[in-house]
Amino acid sequence: MADILIEGKSGKVVIKNIGLLLSGNIDQPILDADTIVIHDGIIHAVGKFNELDTDSAKTTIDAHQTCVAPGLIDSHVHPVFGDWTPRQNQLGWIESTMHGGVTTMVSAGEVHLPGRPKDIIGLKALAITAQRTYDNFRPNGVKVLAGAPIIEKGMVESDFKELAAAGVKLLGEVGLGSVKAGNEAREMVAWARKYGIQSTIHTGGPSIPGSGLIDKDVILEADADIIGHINGGHTALPERDVCELCEKSSRAIEIVHNGNEKVAIAAAQAAIQLKCPHRVILGTDGPAGSGVQPLGMLRLISLISSLGSIPAEIVFCFATGNTAKLRQINAGLIEAGRSADFVFMDRAQHTSGKTLLESVELGDIPGVGMVMIDGIVRCGRSRNTPPATQIPEVLGH
Image (cartoon, rainbow, N blue to C red; front, side):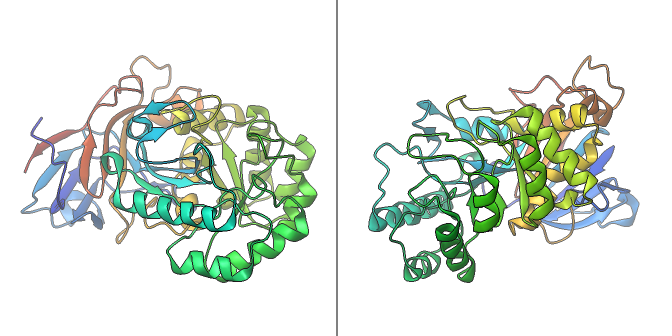
């Protein structure tokens, strides 16, 4: 394998000989194409090799008939500072998760910071600091969208206006702070929405000291943009309540790894039955008490596909394009103009599935052979997944 570019702009990159191209678009999850052309980290063209301009590439990658998919987007993480989590005192968790195919993470609140400030000045300062630091620091290229304040009693509309003006675009999980009543949350969620800040609400039993039960009635009244970990984080609401949320709310249905697996499947199946699979997004809800899961997204995809009897190519859309659209991220879809963030996968060695998609539908996770962010290869064969049967090859610069 030729040397891998790890810094600077990608220049022109050609990925050829793709065996399976997953689009991330739930309306057309598989593309009839075998080549992607990238210019300086942005997808320029997608199609057949002999129909595209592939000359004068700075880097050419032979996919060796493996699968190329949009990089996975973890819709629910709890970062603090840098690539360290105080919850488990673990270094390098973000870079390790990249080896599980994740290229973008979205914060649901920097709640694990020891001594996290809960006064209004302090919580705004922490959110702005987290937003700034992760905007400036990307562990091995991973994009961490952070700075998600936990709302507290006493906040007024001007606080949300100030946060938005400073660059904050997310609210941490509503319910982890002192605001737990549906009417109070609804007012603050509306203020956030007015200034372009997206909200997520905690669902289910308490997860950390200070949080509490957030039931279906509070969730429906608050009307946050994302029904956060609808399958609980960790303790879920009754399955009937979760299905009622899927039916009565029009908001995003977020399913997480660190939740109730049985309810995760029920929620995904409810979305399919209600003909709104575009609302389903996936996350890990880590780091958490159960640890850091570098393969959490792939494990969740396999779980939902295999036990939920949902085609794997659809579930990959839950983890990519659905999240990109609902969270307005310029990645997650393989189409011109999107960030060139990809995970190259193949069926794991000795899986009983004859294809990658079949292996996932049988309950196995795929092997990651390469991860690319902004058109730059960030890792070759994953150190965390089972070895892929075939891996892509960088031919040269």
